[in-house]
Amino acid sequence: MGQETPKVKQTRNNSLAVIDNRTGKQYSVPITHNSIPATFFKSIRAPAGPDGRPEDETERGLRVADRGFLNTAVIESAITYIDGERGILRYRGYPIEQLAENSTFLECAYLLIYGALPTRSQLSHFEREVLLHGIMHADATKFFGSFRYDAHPMAMLTSAFGYLGSYYEEANPSLQGQTLFTKCAKGDPEALQNMDKQIYRLIGKATTLAAMAYRVRQGREFVVPPTGMSYTESFLYQLDHLSPTDSFSASVSASSSPSPYKPHPVLARALDVLFILHADHEMNASSTTVLQTGSSLPDPYSAVAAGCASLYGPLHGGANEAVIRMLVAIGSPDNVPGFLAAVKRREKVLSGFGHRVYKTSDPRSFIIRKIANDVFAVTGPDPLLDTAMALHDAALKDDYFVSRKLAPNVDFWSGLIYRAMGFPMDFFPVLFVVPRVVGWVAHWRQMMLSPEGVKIWRPRQIYVGPSERSYVSFDEREAVQGPGKEPSAVVHSGMAKRRRLAEVGSLATGVKSKL
Ligand code: SDX
Image (tube, protein in one colour):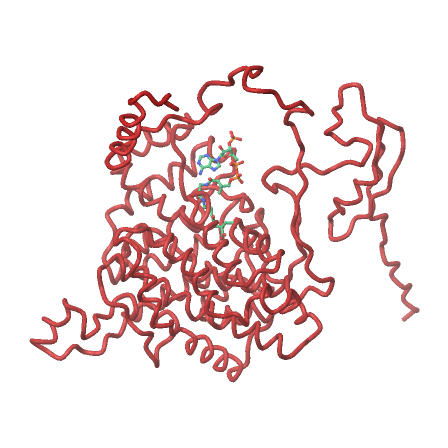
């Protein structure tokens, strides 16, 4: 056979040709990984135009505007890949469907953090360390005891992560030096050990803190993490075990010795798979928040607390709670057309639908629907399911949603499962935070290990405010009034009202009122 002609490797000019029509200058912008460096545009300068403002800083180079990060890549990451058009989600290259079928949450945690599927001995070491670090300092009972019984568990959990960091000065770069974790990038063994210890603590104690927040709401004693159980079994145990000192269980133990509590295996496995699905999702709002915070090099507990606060919002992790509130408000399948009409009038939001990245389908939603069937087989179906199905089917056939590429996301179904499992609605976002701690620490670790070091994230702005103006005295000022343009008068009640009246009363004795 003749010598094969060597295939000529196709090359192409990976660059963008840009002409600045203000100056006629041409530029060639390099393209790598289908992206262009935003900083390149700083070199494209032009004299200020007739319609420009000094604050536009035209002579100092272009800025790239991207409100809401619709198309801005802030990091290079090897952790998670999402293809929103093809509905793909992979952790370190492994499809989420295969992990949900074959893996466990802690094995996926290992994969996301360290980049490879562990050997048996590596996994048992990791599991042992995480479970060992589930114990909380006894003072945590005072911390959680200081919340009102009806405090939102996400408010408790957000605070708890910041509080947790106060125990570990060895994890605080402000105390130990700013290279405390970034020196891991050079393979410093002590630094890597310190970093891993904080990771074990954050993952291990995430369930304990979440369970303590839950027990505050239930008015129950806190439960020490058990031994001999899996991560999710241990979590369910801490949520539901009635400890011998618990007043309720005392009456139970009077009649019979309380049997050692073991969570239902179907519920434990369902929660473990839900945790796998929620473990990471590349640059979602909360992971971005963790990295934004982490970029100034605080301790990882503070960065995680910031991520927890971000996930609390109804546009993000709070959506699973919002979905149930929406379904309860709709009430029955008959009311679905009226609700969707209100959504189209922008009077209401279809929670659990839409996604910044997934524009065809959220692959997690298909897996979650299967879990829902397994759970409902044990718990009994949720009456809201009929309304959810009617809403789901109607929206997917309605051009308003189809044209906007709005499909059900992970939150549309997860709330129904958590409700069927008996969790209160305001605990749903907590069930999102616990697994997402893994994604947060995986991205934080990747940032600390970046060979080029950590640069503080400090984005630019486009200033559209007033140009320079001089200070004027009270007499020369014109009042700027109207809603939102001046401090609102608030209606005082209770003690504040009486104190305000007392103040006015005392001022009534001739002293010029400041009111
Ligand atoms: C999660 O980022 C992640 O990866 C998040 C997450 C993760 O794992 O971390 O996947 C988890 O947060 C899932 C998303 C949960 N949130 C919700 O279900 C809340 C409801 N969804 C929307 O708020 C919204 O879809 C977002 C916030 C999820 C995405 O918003 P975008 O990308 O900014 O889209 P957009 O607001 O620009 O919407 C585009 C159009 C708009 O219509 P027009 O103004 O152009 O006419 O779609 C409309 C929006 O009004 N739209 C909706 C809608 N979502 C978008 N209309 C009705 N109901 C909705 N839910």
